[in-house]
Image (cartoon, rainbow, N blue to C red):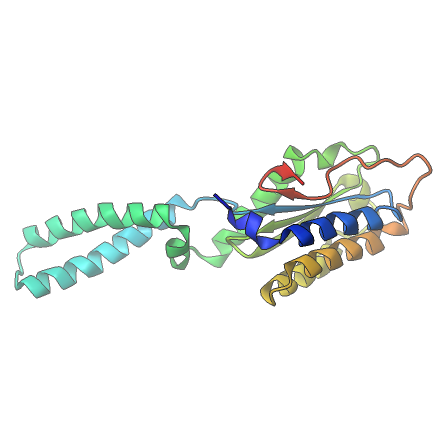
Length: 214
């Protein structure tokens, strides 16, 4: 089954993305890794909240249609509908998005980006020069994080520019182009402080989709 992350880029765009990273890394010792995740969290609270709210509305409509105004009929309808609807929302993530706040999504994406940074070894580069461009497709959010070696010399706030660039490109339907532009901009921001070294090696994958290097 194809995941959300796998559908973001075509095979040609994946190949172009890897080539873009390789090209940028010929001019800097930084290691830039685009990571695409289908989702940063499963949001179980949204399934329960959505099921609760929809079940109340449906149960109220049900007792009205049945011409019953007793509490027991309402409770029976409510409980049955809640069980069905909460499970439906859990099985179909797109349906529960209205019950998730943007702040909750941003918080989960930030946490998932940090986790992906460490899980994929961006903290283990020789000069502490790893950069992750983390894209979470379900939330439509982008997060950029850099390792200590870079943050000691480059203001971390500069990554907001890259986030805006990639986010806007994805919103306009050009994810491959936007990611390449983001990678190139990251390279420009760090090249002065971290130029390519004679013994430089490619330490990390150039593209990771749903945890798998491509």
